[in-house]
Every structure is written in C-alpha cells, then in structure tokens.
Image (cartoon, rainbow, N blue to C red; front, side, top):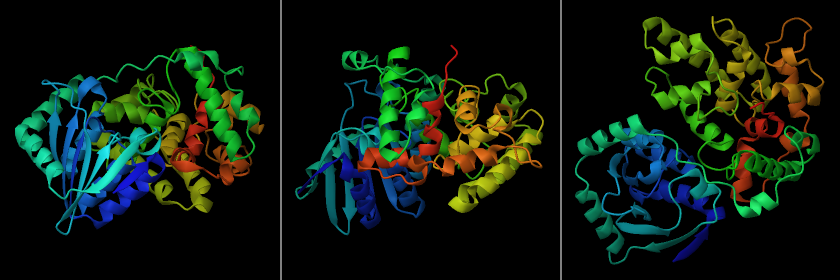
Length: 406
C-alpha cells in the first residue's frame, strides 16, 4: 500500500502505465494533460484503455473526450442520477490489479498542480474492479456515448471561472500590468513574479488563478493548444480546435486572431484550397517541433517567413502557433505583449515578429535575448508544479509582459 501526493503522481502513473496490460479509469473530469498523453501512447500500442468520464458542469473539455474516443473505449456519465465524482485508476498487470483511489482527476491540475492525495493498493478482493464493471455496463454502449459526446461538444461552453478569494483580494499585487518581467533574474524570481501577476490579474478580472488555473487561462490555452497544433494534420478541425489555433474566445491568451477574416476562413471552411494551406503551415511547423534547443531559433524564423508569405497571415499568428507548438522555446508576439517586449529587449516593436532580412532586427534577436535570461536558460524547478511551469516557460512569459487595453 502506498500513499502519494501530487509530487509523485505523474512519475508513478507513467511507471504503472509502462508495466500494465490494461488500464481502467473512472473520473469525474478529464482534460488534455500529460497523464492523458501517457494513456494515448499506451492505447496506440494496442493495449486496452477503458474510461468512464463525467461531464457535470462542463468541467471536462470535449477535446479530451475526443482523444479518449479515438484511442480508448469510452463511456460518458451524465450525472443524471447524482453527481459522478469518483477518481479511480485500475492497472492490470500480469494477472494482478493495482488500483488508485483518491482525489486526482485526469487533468493537468489533478496530476501536476493541485494538492492531491492518492492511495495505491492491490485490488486483492476485486472490489474496485467489480465496481468499475458494474458502472461500465450500466452506461450503454460506445454508440450511445458517441451520441452523447456529439451533443456535449456542440453545446459545450467553458465552465464559469471561480471568483477570486478574499485571501487573494487582500493580497493583490502592488505592481501594474506588464511590470512583472522587470523583476526577473533567476528561476525562483520567475515563480515569484508569476504568483504576483496571478494576484494582479485575479483582482483586475475577479477570477481565481487566471494564469495557471483551469478554464480561461494562459496555461489552459497552452495545454490544449499544444495538443491541437502538434497533431499530424489539421484536416478535420472542430470549433474548439479552430478557436485554439487562432486565439478566439475563450482562448485569447497569446494573441487573439478574431479579426483575421481570411485566416479564420481558411481554418473554418474545408475547401481543397484551404486544406492545402493548412497542410503547408503544418508541414512548415514540423521542423520547429522537432528542433534541438540550439537549432530552434533558426527554424522558427524559417516558419515565420513561410507563414508570412501566405495571404491573410502575418508574424503575430506565426508566433502564436510557435508558442503553442514549442512553449518551452517560443514567445508569442501580439498586441498585448509587443510593447513590453520591445521595452525589455531594446528591439523595435514593429520587427519583433518578423523573419530576419538583411541587417534588420527580427524575431531571431528576440529569441537570442531570451536565451540570455537566467530564469529561462537555467530553470531549477522544485516539485511537479514548477516542472510544469518550466516546460512552458517561454509561452507563459506572455502573462508577465501582457498589457490589457480592455
């Protein structure tokens, strides 16, 4: 028997997945996250994943359900007979079943951010497996769950954000928007300023954790957007997929392209011409996804040049896609971030999102400046939460330089 906290969950989960023959999951909510990625890989290799997922309060993102529908066997619990709220994971391993029971949903927050507690034990008497089997068989078949998912996806809206707590209200940051990046030095300062910015925007928007929380936040946009951007192709895109790629509400962090009519049309209408443009952009992005740290800046600028040559596209959208594809390396240059980025770097604001041409300044200079920052080049995360932030630190930097004109 083993009792685990959030700092152990993801590593232990990955270890269990590697040894398992089959995995059964029953959770109240699911979202795109590293734990779900591990299940996807497990199922892609021919192993069986069965997942029962609740949808109460729209807290489960439809993209996570589509991932499970594609790679696993899925049942959706609609909570009509009471809120579906379990968190159960069963790992079948060569005739032995190990079960996790605790507080962690199949979400980024559940495995890497929240204060969670999970008990691992061998399911000696089979009680956990029996409960799962009973619940599984009560939920119909995959066709009925697929129909329910279609309706859920069609009608889905982000859950209402939690208002800020009284504690956060009393502790709201004394700094103004865009000032947080001025206080960066080492990795610890990045963590501190992220918390300061969280308090500032929480007070400004009356929303709990608008940077690193769930819902309409920077980290949610990065987490969800990375999974869409990195798909092998962009042929079939849902509304949420399109909105994530283009920064439409509720994914406006890292720059909103709501007014880019031609770009929106290319991602909305599945004409042969539009599909070809999507393929062109996605193919150009692949070298950036796979590039080594030393090569990334160069190939990122190649991508900007390629995308900027397409009618209706420009550097702002290119840097958004780069930040989603490589949140560890790429900064988004957008209307909310460009002024502060220019002030910090000394680079012309109009050149920040441009590909290098001649001796002019460009996105390449911005990335080279970033590489010289100690918090970026030498992160030293402590615990699962900071490891998560370190893995997306370049994209998350947007929250520290953002200036809101609303």
